[in-house]
View (cartoon, rainbow, N blue to C red):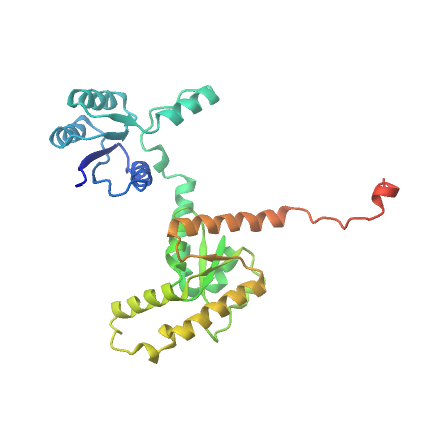
Length: 295
């Protein structure tokens, strides 16, 4: 049975990041949904909105939006009613809940989450840090890192670090190369260190694809330990043993997206900090229950 095409219009007065995330999360729950997304972002004037209305009239379909301007919002809702398509403001429920809890009205502030404040510049600083400390560069700067990722080549360390930087996290990454010593800064690291590992078969596919991209396809696979199956298995096992010996947690990225890997990294960061602030347990006195505690 052919899938019926559905037009979905995303309308935002900002960058559309919120709508993109929501639509991606919801659409992923359907098998072959046949949804065509129409993105209308930075809609901040009636002229901008007129183009949106024209698009909705030509290709009718559900509309989800984030518009704080009451005039633009009212016009969009009227249009959807006239065309006969459902229309929903995705932030209304949460906004109304918080208004009730806080006891204050939310302001009509457009793109409030994208202001150039301290948090914005923290993310920019983190991005510069990742660029300067990628793939083992600038190891002296580990003293300023929020987290260090270690792992074999092509275990998604770099993309994970850039994703973390977009969240304001300074992430350095160090490759674990067979026979190469670790930088001395990792002997007593001032921040959490997290290992990334991957299934050998998946890693071989990634590395072979990498060689084809850079024009090294003419090389026979067995001629390089980089893509030799047994050497790769040994490389991954050695890396995992190193992490275990140093007490570094390890995340298997084989079936994880970059977003999931980054979220798990931050969980490990929280665990590391919690252990450092938690006071150590005093040894239990076996006689305390009989003699009573000392005062």
